[in-house]
Image 1 (cartoon, rainbow, N blue to C red):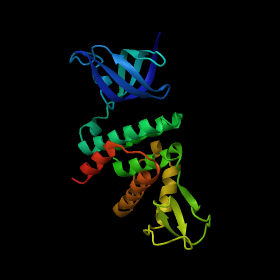
Image 2 (image 1 turned 45 degrees about the horizontal axis):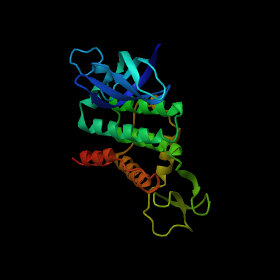
Image 3 (image 1 turned 180 degrees about the vertical axis):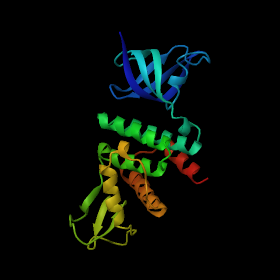
Image 4 (image 1 turned 45 degrees about the vertical axis):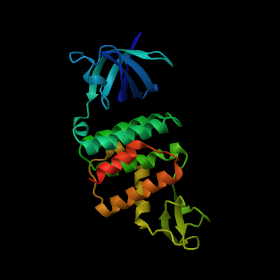
Length: 243
């Protein structure tokens, strides 16, 4: 029986001369594999809707724990702007890899909604660093390493906070500070905002570049120190961003 599922293509693998297998992140089933017969053919009606980083409604013969079969596809968003820019594509590739890792821990619907919303905002022209950082902050809880932005991570003191330490994993008070890098405390309010904001509702961003870079540096260090993730797409993104 054919059913319709919304999903975004994370990976394409050629199969034979004209077919391919795609890994699709769906809100209903999580990541599933789908056989797309003939989709590699230039004239195939399945070709465009099964390309990597394309959001579509897919009509499939769903098979649990097996390869589903694609019947037809209707594109929702091809993310043309992202695909036409190597830097934006690098951000999207990193977020796709990060989401794949997060889904090993949790399959909450909000993860799908936030991921798609983040891609839509990057596609619309909003700063990819900020949108990426917002999603990174929201995903920390699902990775089991949520940020403590309320009190000192060493003693629990809520007063006389000196800095936000990626090495120690959160806030440090005056008594527990031992020469760690000083980060403006104003960043704490912004990171809290990142936790709470609905990505879909963001229409404009007005953060200063130095603040954006400071937050990005903090999150890069925190992810390196606490998540245990090593993603080649992140290294590639760093390289591209420096060009």
